[in-house]
Image 1 (cartoon, rainbow, N blue to C red):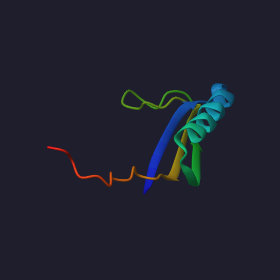
Image 2 (image 1 turned 45 degrees about the vertical axis):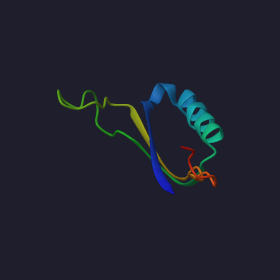
Image 3 (image 1 turned 60 degrees about the vertical axis):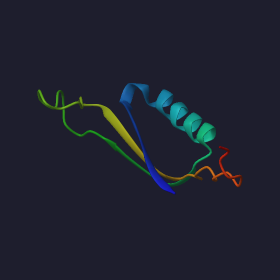
Image 4 (image 1 turned 30 degrees about the vertical axis):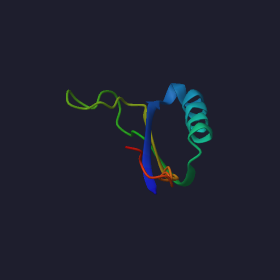
Length: 77
């Protein structure tokens, strides 16, 4: 089943973000289909309703994960 995983960080912590993403991929066992990223291009604050600053990084992974297989045994009463 395909699912999306989103990571957000700031540009000055890019190396830690890379480690976090790689760690998540290893632990989840998900197969990465695609990776899309963006560094915000506006200077300074994005305004009072924005959660992005001038150097936010957003990474989106499209992954394929295996769902747990249902048990072959019928439930016991």
